[in-house]
Image 1 (tube, rainbow, N blue to C red):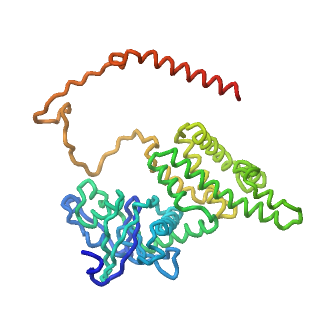
Image 2 (cartoon, rainbow, N blue to C red):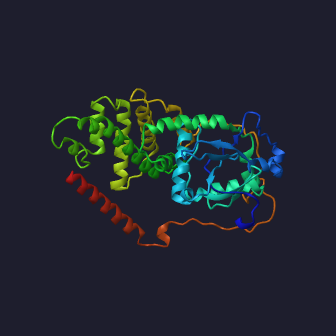
Image 3 (tube, rainbow, N blue to C red):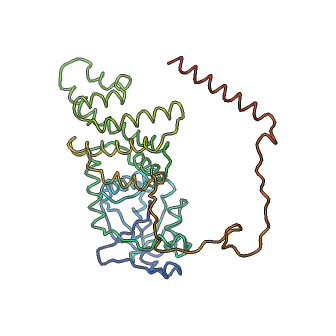
Length: 392
């Protein structure tokens, strides 16, 4: 069905983000599919395609539409149809949600798609190229696999009122921290959760620099402009002199940056420099220090430097979701499970198979020069380390 022959309605530009969030109209708008409904795809798919209401999405005089499946949508007007503009608009709201206490990850360019709002209040979502959009589309269409359907089980919807309250709280924080880039900050937290620590550190440090620059302008540059000392204002704006590390030091001396935050920023800065200049991959404590430092700066900035722990719970939520985080040794009992297809070698496997005789051999059996090449590589590495130590 093409847009030209669609029933009466409005074309939309839409965005979705992981993880799946269900947004209810109110407390009576329940979601309780059974395990049988999930396995047979007999859950209420109509509700997943239904709009739940509107929120303030920073695009006055328009309101932003919220779907029951957590999707966000705007009319496909020219100012919203550009993918880059749409991504920036939606990610601003997603970051406000995160800072307001509703965990969400950032939207990628592939998470932007089109849709159609029928006059009945239901939304037809048109495809999408990302894993997240494909999941939403297949769940709405009841064409997802049982493994994908399971995400719908035991989901507790968030009411529209609670979502708007979280967005308002996050917006109040961001308004005092502008011009931080929502896409970069969300990319940092999203990469962190996915365990992509180098990418996380790069994005998070960029956000830290943006916040420090904002504090510097307010607490240093603006206050210097009121005196009559020639060229002082221009000197304080010189990035060559006032690097981020120098700015952090002076802000610490002024009592704007607390000692605990300063320590975290030092760890993050050193790890970021090691990665940028030497390619040294950051470890989990490095990335966690950067993440915690960023949230502490946001908290401090939004509370007029009175409280660095305002976003402590949000920070803990992000840290707890990181796949690199050490898992508990406690044995967990699953609530639901299904047997997996068995393989030859497992005692439960039954059937015929063609065996494969896998023989592991040393590299030297097919590369006689391997030992000599390995020795030369080790010698070259030692010489490089000695040269670098001498230059320092």
